[in-house]
Image 1 (tube, rainbow, N blue to C red):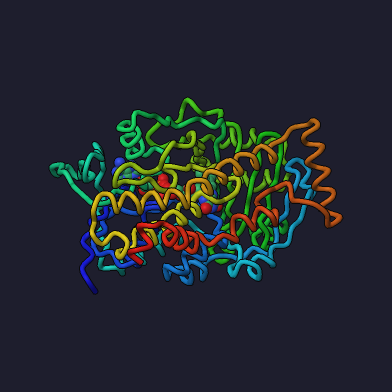
Image 2 (cartoon, rainbow, N blue to C red):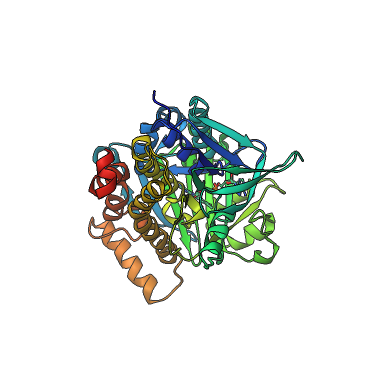
Length: 445
Ligand SMILES: Cc1cc2nc3c(=O)[nH]c(=O)nc-3n(C[C@H](O)[C@H](O)[C@H](O)COP(=O)(O)OP(=O)(O)OC[C@H]3O[C@@H](n4cnc5c(N)ncnc54)[C@H](O)[C@@H]3O)c2cc1C
């Protein structure tokens, strides 16, 4: 294979950073380095929805089979009133695979991130610098940044041809980039927080109603005023995963460094105190001292994701509330598009203007789509969290019509038109098309 001289640095080994490294190595790049502050990749224990638009890309990366082997396919979703457990709406999801080529699955984050990491380790072109915190990124000319090893070794400076900031919602790359552009995009409190809970089959098996839940192929959402719980089986139905959203009453206690607080079990039971007995029994299974609350934070849309030879990806530029289950999927779409626009043949000369142009095509393909989903996720949260009043009556009328087989699904996650917009788009095809339409890039194809 011909030498691909571009030196690509990726900050962060989350879903976005790992996927970007894999996409670029698969495209033929030989000098991709991932800098991650964590000394080891101990991936957070929680479930994650693996939507078809994510699966399609993971399959191209060659890692989907490994993930799917442990994941659970969802054949239906049930939206229920949290207080009574009464079903508001029911949607079958078996058409998803027929329509979009991949089923809707749910899995363990460790399995998704682990498969991406394994995929990266097989690529000679990718190096990992774990335990390496990046700071002082500068974008004038070739990007440079300082690397501080967390083991206390002397810091050093790195220069690269492409810098990708995949450093999450607290992204220092974003802050540095916007500072050079004379802008800011401070992280905003959404007023919402999430508990992430995993119950084992062992814990649930003695309760017939809970056993029925863990054995089902259903994504269940229980809704209430300003709160909801979404739950599904993962890990070959050995774990039942619950992810909640509720008012962020512990806001002040959340440290900026982690965005998590050790929650109190009694506070959690109180927040969901008026939810049905089945939910009470599940929440009661969470061991004392193991309740962790995640702050849900976002920021306003950025004026740009690209500065010179640097770009942002994933939560660093489009943090998304979890109410559409698309945050990681969108980070993975970013990565796949970069694999196309930064393909070695398109940036062979590694000139600043060539790289900048490739990054701008990435932004063109991705920004509007990702930001539309950010808004839609927030809107879905509002619709699911309605309290008594006219808006809730209207929503519940839509649920009632759905029971008669008519109209849209008020939970947008399960609505066929919204799914078409999310799952039906192949961003890799879009990126290829955008490169061919670009007068300069087209000449390089
Ligand atoms: C409750 C909840 C449920 C969710 N459910 C889903 C779902 O079902 N489906 C879905 O698709 N998405 C879901 N998401 C969204 C998804 O988790 C995120 O969008 C995704 O993980 C973002 O990945 P990322 O790589 O952009 O950022 P991150 O995962 O935050 O990764 C950033 C990485 O950068 C590293 N880093 C940060 N700063 C530095 C630095 N200065 N130097 C070096 N390294 C650094 C960090 O250590 C971290 O490893 C959910 C989110 C939440 C909160």
